[in-house]
Length: 581
Image: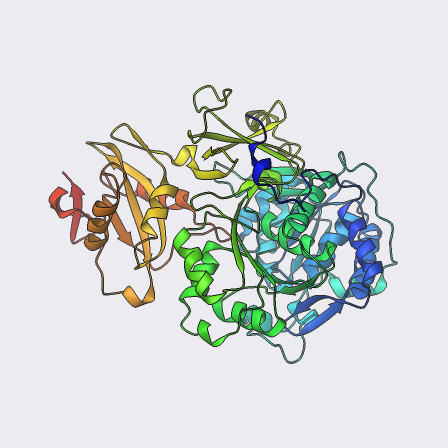
């Protein structure tokens, strides 16, 4: 149906972009142009671009002295910190392949991705070493480099520290000290990348929403494409101050925040862990202009009682990714940050976050996530054959072709064939596109709820439920229903002002008045929090797994459904358990 989105394309944004250099080379160019400018700030510690460049060169040389060769995988097991930035660019510069591990991983998860990637060198924060030790002899690591938060924290931090950040530096005889390696190693300023489209930069593991995590193969070309899609689309400049609150181990934080800010010569303010207080203080103190965040963190900041005490007017843009943003949430944010453009975006690990859909800065459309990004095509195909493009506003599977697309899954040819077909990436996401090319993401195929023959998409129900003034967060899944096949169930986190003041039954009755009968939740369960990924994405699959494991026909324990549909029955757990008739 053509590239209909060009009709609303902003005139100063290129429709196509082709990286001519590798990311570490682009950083070197920026270092030459702004050597004395602050590149990184970390709780009051500042590092200039010149200092960053020298340190990256030393780390690249250190890897070479340890025997790391081009194509070797080097794993990063760290929260966001200056050492992550140094290691990441040093690995790329040395021709290695960066494998970023979730710092919340326990040893079994850690072992799987180390084994799968074949990484033999690991860079980690010292307090995480106990989990590395538990991996044992099942995975041979030739080099374990440890670093401490204390290596780069100032004497008087400007933001509250976590308990781990306050710990004295740890050392272990079988490991290599990060700072000692930097001191003793020769510099290697040369960038060991010869073919942008063949040399691999990153193995970025998926979140494992459909089984075990898979390593998406991201070439230097794909990485550069993703980073510059963000830098060009959001008009990053050297004057921008970026709040580094999105975790760097995730593709979203790595490409859009960390890499995008530095290759454009901006100032990156790093937070290892985030809270409403640390976010508000950092924005106010540094005059942050760009905030890359998630709906979860945005909600927490909005709900923080002290937020009105901080001046957040420096923000020119807030990008909310990792999950669809409720319209009501954007409206609330605009009251607190009136100068900021609040926009949504859609990307995947398989496109290194930057190849997908994103809102133009000049406009948005309620209910839609954006239009296809630079060098990106999107179409919606039918769910049955997955070959025919559907009509305007008809729902189907989202498929993408873009410059930042992965080359495949690491050592998984069959899984690769499932998602890469004729140059297109089959996302497994359900969506639709309007006449101007605006894309709406409705849900995932595997999360589709079939209720009385109707298709119910969790995202749509969640969007509607966010209109209730008491709802802070919500996740909807399908649960078994002997009459309807499946029925929606909503897990709700209440805003602090509404706790103890509203019941689950009242939420259900409100849904009855505001949604079609087949769509509205029959069951509501209040939670203090919802399960989330490291990037802040609400994990519906975890809730679905809990339902599957629960006894009886539904997991309605501690839940309330419409009383007219209920019969009390004694639960094995004690007390009354309400079940559907």
